[in-house]
Length: 558
Image 1: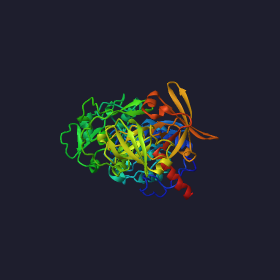
Image 2: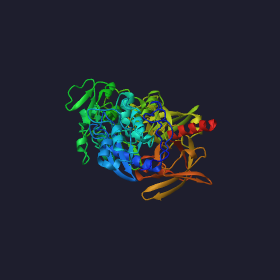
Image 3: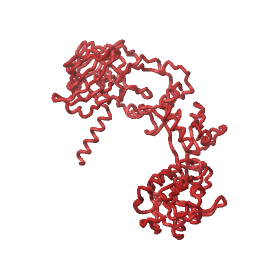
Image 4: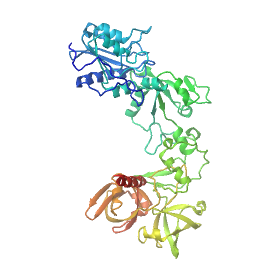
């Protein structure tokens, strides 16, 4: 077949192996759409034996003559035969004058296991070779392409190079860093957890996600789980996809203490990962997250734990149940921020005295008395066991974080400053007024709502209340400075209650958002008594506050 005029036998200077450019040569990709099409087909073939070819890379090869595929091949399990040898064997005499598309430079070194692929291509009489990447193996490293060029074969490199690098990332990682490529598989819920603390839950993912996880197992030579996961869950770590059952990876346990692990390889430190055979290691997350959450292992708990559910779900809102006496917890292990569940990210703030709440009301209090003493001394009747409330503790009162300054059986007192009264709903601090109450979070407690600070961002007005089935749809008009920080399906605290924003609408008379109150929420909070024209305290989502600050500096910089 005719050789395109654009093809060149001149080999550009090799770029540095730094910066992720392993195996790619200088110059932009000058390939045609047809080249890209056939190289994509070769990459698809290369994926067939990923995780099965170490220490050789998984390579794909397509031989094309007059727009028709005459040979296909991919590196076989164990690393031999190579993709080019398989494709040439299929093409036979049709390879003469054809173009070979290969995802990695044909090897130039001879091996007791087979001849060099560059020599095979020369002997077959191909007219052109298109390689996605050059081979970083020092035995080849440009020598394969040079040998082809010396035989009069047109060569080019760089076609779909990024995809090719990703295809053999394990091989390249081993060559450049001396270790396998490590993939982390971790399924988590939105609050950063992976399981119920009592071990009752089985999956938090659907069948499609689980099938994908098993496919990834089949694409890795080894799979690593922690010692705790092995002891608690006893995972099989096999591949349960039809046709791939024989591709289960080798099992690895990192532990400096474990000595009895039949069927598993035990490594004493993370550095020992480099000694593992194969180029791909899959790490699966396990029981460490719920253990960090509570200080206890799921294995330590009974199957039915009365303390497990301290909240009950009431539609879009949850009300906290009376707490049982807490069990002593084991010391928490220090973890990096990215390793922690979302609620644990609040821990530094709690430890440093910055009170945090969830927006989940646990009692409705009533103001018994309000007396001006410089600041306003407010006495609140409550169902809380005040014997367990320390002086100086923080309680959210309809969304306002206040400090307990006095207490007695069935009541506590707080001081409300003039600044607080000026920034909260009018008439809120008068005798007979009902308040939504929530005690400050403690380290290790469940985050059931969203993060609330107890600092009111503004006062809004209820403008409309309409029935919506058994629920009530409430429209609230907010000040203009808060409007940008409300979004449909986002979170907002109204008088200290964590709620989901249903809709946001900008109107001529201001911005409105709507919320839905189910009957139970109406019953367990003061929001059931809302009326049009009534002011309410608003706290925007804490993430929106940080966004506000970021946008402020972005505007200054711009």
